[in-house]
Image (cartoon, rainbow, N blue to C red; front, top):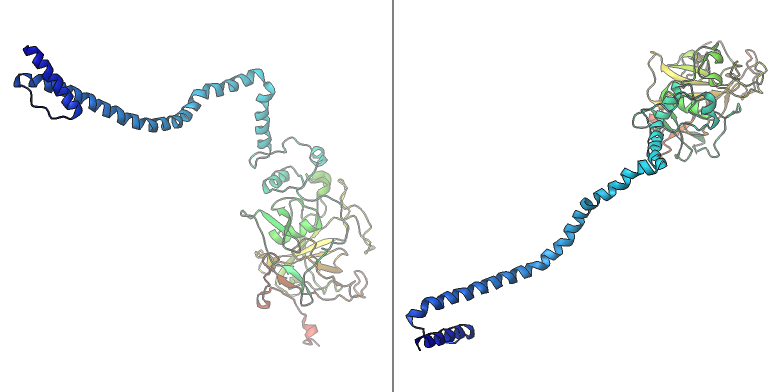
Length: 405
């Protein structure tokens, strides 16, 4: 009977705890057992609460799993990725050779690798293109290969279809555009757009490129020599050899048919000019020079075409600023000149002896007209050079001022 009562009391207590009912406290003898059972229930509740919290966290864990899976995928697939790489050399020889071929191609045209080793001149010129990069021009020069145009040219310069003018004068471009290392000079057209370039230390023969070269660098291309008697057969330049890089006096006393060039030392001025040959297909204006190919690869037949340019000042110092240099072209042996205006096809008005009605190279019948001044403006920015900043030297003989009887 006592066991029955105790059992009933325990059941009532459990019901009371589950239903929240107020039940009289059980006998002291049963307290320990009931408390133990209560702790057991409480532990279950706490565990359930813990599971609930974990269940709430499960979605976050599920969200993170896809993020982790891609991270693990490359690791899992790495062997798969390597497998074709391992098989390719064995199964596909052409595929294995392609990367090597590409690497070799890149190395052939690397600034640090000479692409013309063991290349013959015949092979080089069979598919010729002018050099667009300085490093390419550099390697060409080492083998006596050209970097510019090699097309035959007439004695007369090709004039641009448009030539800017200001106040009735042709305009000389004052813009000097060099590469960062100073080894490339960019040639612009009359609108200021870059159309070509010349590279320092490279070889050129065309009038446009040689004129731009001497204006930009104050010296001559690599294929020029000061000697007038060098044999093409003895030169690495062959038919592209050019001669006669020598001082030009411009003395109108010794050569009265020549016009006076700006501030030239031969007439008491402050600039020393030099001259070089320009090889054309001949001349039809000077009977002293028969029409002929300038250099046929074995023999040079010097014509009447020259570039004359200001190279040093009277102290022998090189002219640094290109806007203080002058470059002129004469195709009738110093009788007439045209100034290079620092743009493609930019040539000034003709002045000199034939222009004035004189007889070719005559020391008795001569009438040279004076240098024709030009305006100056930057073709790229459009900014004109103020008259006060213009560097235009022109020597006027004292006899013309009436100072000599």
